[in-house]
Length: 132
View 1 (cartoon, one colour):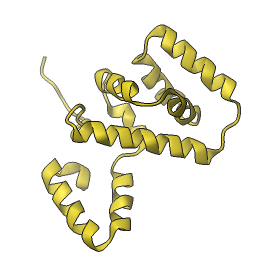
View 2 (cartoon, rainbow, N blue to C red):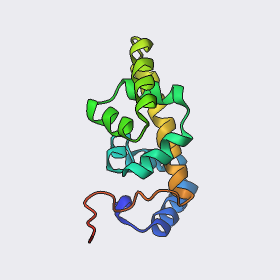
View 3 (tube, one colour):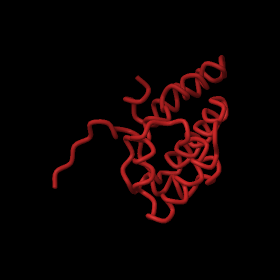
């Protein structure tokens, strides 16, 4: 429901809830945008995201994702950058799921920051239609 509201309304509601139950607000925010939702971002938004994310965090976060997610992120990179990231992921070896999830949460935090700054837009990315 919060994802369908305009930014101001959802922010006001979350601020009001936060005054009485900060834990609930954090849970709601975590559910509003999950790592797989990055698939809904266009190439330009992914490029912005990649420019702000630490490479080590990205490597760990992508290690535990679907091939589709990896490809979505790698397509926004230069060919050499994508090759280097693939090599880094292979060299990493086994990673604890807890570490992967922590890396993904850090990337989600960057996505939220970029949205708050108006650099990317998360509202309406799913099913949005354009006229060309």
